[in-house]
Each structure stands twice: as structure tokens, then as C-alpha cells.
Image 1 (cartoon, rainbow, N blue to C red):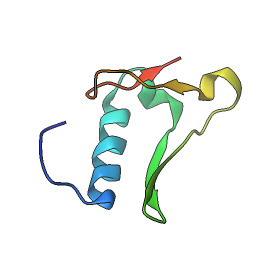
Image 2: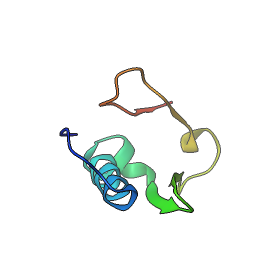
Image 3: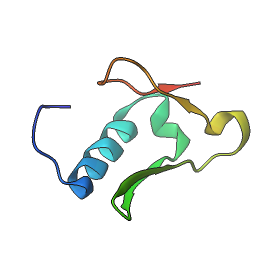
Image 4: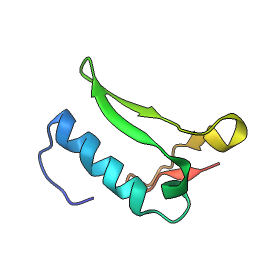
Length: 64
């Protein structure tokens, strides 16, 4: 992601777009939205396929 000042809504949209562009994560039907002042990531899959792990590199989100 480029450095910028984001609103929560624009950040959610940017993250959503990046996830959809990813070859692995794009198939996971992830939704990113802003709810009550927080970012919420919702998986469209169940079980182990629904898991994500954080990555110390702020430019990456990894599938488990």
C-alpha cells in the first residue's frame, strides 16, 4: 500500500482491493469493512481455510 492518510472507509476499501488482487487470498472471499470505528475482516470460507495470520511486514497479509 502506498503511504497516505486514510479514513477507515478508504483503508477498508484499499485492503479489500489488495486482498482480491492476491492469488491465494483472492479466492478466500474475504470482506473488509469499517464497523463502529474498527476494521472488520470477514471470511467467506469456514474451518482452517478461514484463517489468516498477521505478518510483521506491514505490506503483507498471509494465509495460514
